[in-house]
Image (cartoon, rainbow, N blue to C red; front, side, top):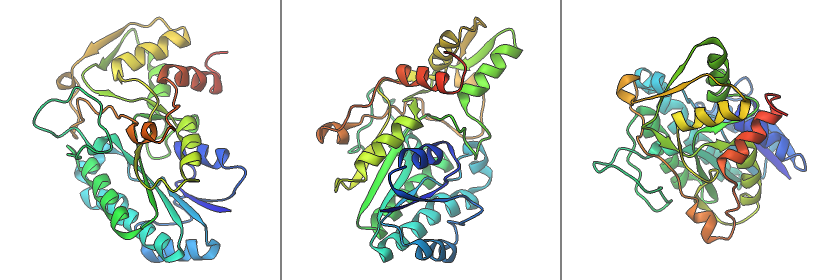
Length: 289
């Protein structure tokens, strides 16, 4: 079976290509396909005629999205529509990757994890563009899986961000006397290797719709950093700060923990705690043995 993967050189795309080794995987990078151009998408997909398309391509620079709104919506919304339109034309299943940042904009502070049945209210242009992409996928492709994930970390690093949070914290911990990390943004850290394996299981079913797929548990960026350094055996002090003390152009959700309720209802939620996944990541990257 042919499976096309867009964004194949990113964190998740890389792990998907490795996980799907039993399939005929067609990897597409930005050099191969421009998802904001429906002609480019159609030509690339018609050439290979995949049975499944997994769209991981996105404009993920959250702060830059605030200044580059057209680019954000061109890639994250219209790009998603283009892939959905072509998937429908081919009769292919579509797996579309979305984000926890579609949540967080409610008037009342959130303290319980979001399920797939909660109404998204995004805060940022990035979140709004990704939600628009979700809606267009739902409209244009009948057989779709929309997968929302959170706080991704993978051994390949993010091609759109030039690395990932873990590697940045490890580097800074070796360069500085202390680290100051935000403690009032809570999310669900997720290892792309685990996410890729679950996507491979899900796409073989007919459980279409929206699924949250994250590792178990919740963490702030501060708590995440403390665990990273503890596992790596680094003693650099980590100081918790508030979001107001670390201003960023785009507003982030104060709480965007996802509940894998759809998977749980289907008897498929065997995702492990993020702490276990983080340890395996550090081993895979050679930071610990």
